[in-house]
Image (cartoon, rainbow, N blue to C red; front, top):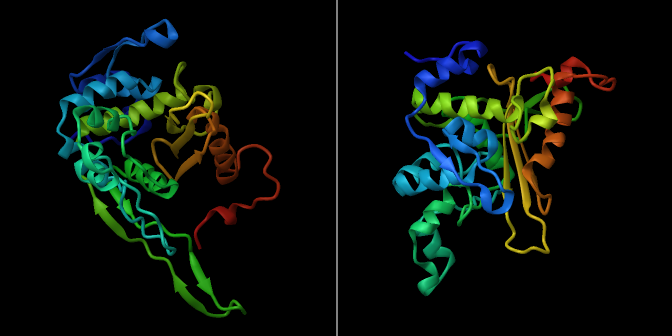
Length: 281
């Protein structure tokens, strides 16, 4: 069946290799760093944030498959929150024609390749990134997002409305794909050279995470950073997305997510929080 039932099963390298897709890339990361990632598969490409792996993947797969998957994960889609929201864009031919005129609106293979690392015309909100992370954690089940648990009368005597769990969409995720990204996101935070390892090494809760960096195109302006995670990695209870304009590499935002996790899981000295504050009621 391939269904993962425990943390040991998810993160045992031998089990991962059994299900891993037979696709690796030899990464030449030499121009700016003077060294290479060498042979990387999907999980280890996530661990070290290897653009070259996903460039190659974006070149090989159909744009329709990439776009369909992004849509199923909630990117560029309504999240369900109670306030008006921007939907942003998924990078595809239709989007580029909408945003640009004339020859600038033509879609090229290079657009698809850069879209594979989240760039090109991809534009998403922090709430969409959080919904996306939650959907990954739930193996393709995307729930309606909400800012409200419940609304009560001013005297607290009457329940006026209450948020209910609602599934917005489901995406079928194969065993191979599930193994690759869950193991890869685990490596990001829990293995040496993972892009968030310095923040989460020895952390008492097992984290699954991904860092992201959106270059500004200018040497004078810092890149925008993004960080997403869910925890515990083997039995998710919380998903977090942190985005920082001109914040630099996404790994710099991991400490903010860790502070949130400290409060949620009451890690360390959190004297002002009681256990009931972190429970739906």
